[in-house]
Every structure is written in structure tokens, then in C-alpha cells.
Length: 258
Image 1 (cartoon, helix red, strand yellow):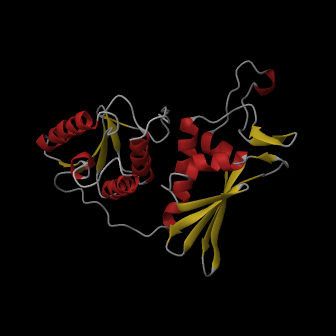
Image 2 (image 1 turned 135 degrees about the vertical axis):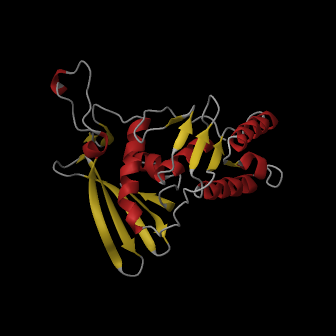
């Protein structure tokens, strides 16, 4: 049975976008960053026992031990929060997890989707210098644009929708990168192994793109994985000709898969 800390750490790291092969135990998550480089993330108390108000991130070399570590206060990542109609927090409060009669929970304020995105971004900023560098994307000539759109449900209709959007990008003079047109003919979406391989390959293609264009009225789980990857890499994410802000509030559909 998952404890509360594992539940919260999974919201940040389970998708493997920041660290690979995450393992969860107690208040900590351990995974791989690059080759022999590992990352440990854990909730810690800065001042008061049983009030977990920070994330400690430790970067380790598998052979040489600790490379670096930092402690990211939750309030610094997501700010002080107002608690309506609560006279004890007129000036807001610093979000933290606390222990109440042996049970752990968020005290007074529970983070929303935008808060978890903000925390992820702070962790990404810290980890980025420890990653292997990838070649910079050339800004000359047409842009490579990744088409982010739903696939699940009416697959044929969604593929045609993505094709039309890719055609719009092509006609604008840019280069559409559309996984809907690449993978379904060679990877069966109904086969879990082939489907996962196609998703992983799609995310790899995204890393080389200049922009990600998001289409469709509902953003599925697979689309959110692509959006998170782009934001982690600071690739502009466009929807309705607007760039998604780094701390914009957005609701993620958790009930659907791409």
C-alpha cells in the first residue's frame, strides 16, 4: 500500500520525464538522470519536526557518491497560499505536509495541478546542469513543429484531424512532425508493448523540435506527457496561437489515455 509521501512523489516523478526508472520508498524517490548519475528526491522538515515543507534533491554518481544537493522549500516553489474564511491565515500560509495522529496530509492547503507543474519546473532547473548536453536547435530556416493531438477514442477520425493540422503547418512553411502519421501504420496502438515504444519514440522526436503545437478540446494523458517534456526542455508550447506560460494553471485529464 502506498504511503502519502509516495503518492505525492509519484505526482512529480512517476512519468519518468525528469528521472528514469524511479523507485519509491518511504519519503524518497530514487532514479537515474544520466548513465552513472542518480537522483534522490525526498520530503524533509526544515524547522519543525513532522512538518515536511521542502524537497531535498541529491545528485549522486554511482561510483563516486554525492555530487551535489539542494533543498527546495515548497513555499519558494509555489508561493504562500490564501486560505479563504480562515482567521488563522489572514496573510496566507506556507504549504507543507504534516503528521496528525500518525496520518500524513497537506495542512490547510492542497496543491493543484499548476502547483505540481511549478515544483517540477524548479527541480528541472536544478537538474539541468547535470544532464548531458544536446545539440542546440538551429533557428535558421523552417521550424520543426511537433503535432500534439489526441489519438485514443475514434482513432481514424483523430488521425485525420492530426493530418489536417500537420498540413496547416506544412502550408505555413514549417516542418510538421506528426506521430499520428508515422506510428499507427507500423505500431499497433492496441498492443501495449508497441504502443509504449511508439510513445517513447514520439517523445524522442519532440526533443529535436522547435515548437509543440497542441490541438483538440481535451488534452489526454499522452498529450500531457508531451507537454511536460516540452516544458522541461523549455520548448515553446503553442495552443490557439498562444504560448503556454511556465506557471499557467491548467487542468489535466487523468481519466483518459492517449
